[in-house]
Structure formats: structure tokens, C-alpha cells
Amino acid sequence: MKPVTITEQNPIASVGLKLVVNGPQIWDDQQAAWYLKGIEQSDYAEKLGNTLLESIGKQTQLLDIGAGAGTVSRRIMDNNARWTAIEPNTFFADYLTAHQSIWPFQLNVIQQSWQQTVTDDLAVHETSLAANTSGPLSETRDFWHWQRQLTKRLMIWILPAQTGPRGKCLSGFLPVSLHGESTGSPVQEILDALGDNYQPDQLVTVDWTFQQSFADFHAADSYFQQVFNPAGDPEKADSLTAYLASELKPAGDTLLAQAAKKSAVLIWMFN
Image (tube, rainbow, N blue to C red):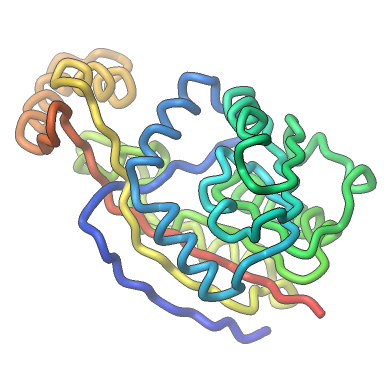
């Protein structure tokens, strides 16, 4: 098996949670906007961006698969870099397009999923990035080969790596009795699925925090009840409300929910 360099980075700030992974279903615009608000309040871009800069430096060409809002990508590209963003969600694709004339990159937005994208229609890029997209999780080997065809030098995956829940952005804010999700990092399963011949050259884990603000207690309670108690169970509703009352943190005129996250950065280096 190819040796893997594994490094651990300790958290710097005491903020936030972690991001959710785009599942096989494409988020609707409301979900995407809610996620963007939270990720911009979090230290995800700082922590992951700095880690990648230390590992690979600034990039001049980037194929960004499941680009979202380009949160990390914008941190690792040189001015005037060629940036191809594949993003199926309408909200994020529109967000990227609206910033084409503002950001200092040669940005091309392709609004479709990677499964809909024919490799022959794309140029090979020096570097490719798949950050928190479904491909590595659900179609590991097929996605690796698809991305490899479009990558000349560096190929990167960013994956959820916390041992806690990862199904929803704020699952980790709640105890297991309230979030009800299975726990455990998927990283070893992904490495096993890749097999001996496709192991990354480097694997770095990064601790960070996802953070989401709510205008008031009612807004927070409504969100958590809808997401974590959709059946409206009265006993669980009371438990959620009581937990929120004790754990939400005031921040100016808002209330904050925070959850600790960990991401794994997998890097392949080709000649």
C-alpha cells in the first residue's frame, strides 16, 4: 500500500460547527442559502484554506467539483487563476455567476452535477478539488477515476472526519438522544474502498467549527423542531426546547448554535 502522510492540526478558535456534505439529492435554494450563512460565520474557510496553502501553495488552474460558493477555492488561487466551477445547485451557481466580475479569477460556472458532466467536454486542469461533495462518499472509486481524468498534477478531496454525527449541519450541537443520527468517521471506509493502488499521498485532518446564528429563541426553536423533530413528538419537542434554552449562546442581538467538526484533506500528487 502506498504510504500516507497523516497530520493532525489542532483547533485555534472556539467557534462553530462543521458543514454538512451534499448528499445524492441537490439542496434546494433555501437550504443552500441557510448553509452559506452558517459557513460564512464559521472558521471553515480559514482553517481549511490555510491547511491547503501550507500543503500545495497558490494555484493557477482549478477544477472545483461541487463548488458551492467557492469558500475554500478562493483562498488557494492566484489572481487571474482559471477556475472551472461545477455546481448543480441553482442558488450557488447564481451566487458564483454574480461574482464573476468581482472576484479576480477567470471563472467559468457549469450548472450541473459531476455525473452529468462528460470529461471530454472539459479541459484537464493542473489542480482539482472536491470539497464535501457526494462523489467520494457514495461512488468512491468511480468518482476517483472521473476526477483523475481531468487532473494533471494535484487532486484533492475534503471529507467529513468527525466521529460525531454528520448528517445535518447542526447535529453535533445536540446530544445523541436529540439528533438521533449514527456516528463515526467515513474516512477509513473511503480509504478501504479506494484500495491499495489509489491511496492519497497525504492525509491531513483539520478541526474547525460550524456556527449558525438565529434572530431569536423562537427562530432557533422552530428550526430545530422542524429539522430534528419533524413528526412533532411532544416529549421530544419539550426536550429540544429545554436544551436550546440552556445551550444557545447570546451574541449581540442573535443566538448562536455551534458544533465541533473535523475534516480530512486527501491529496494525490501526480507527475
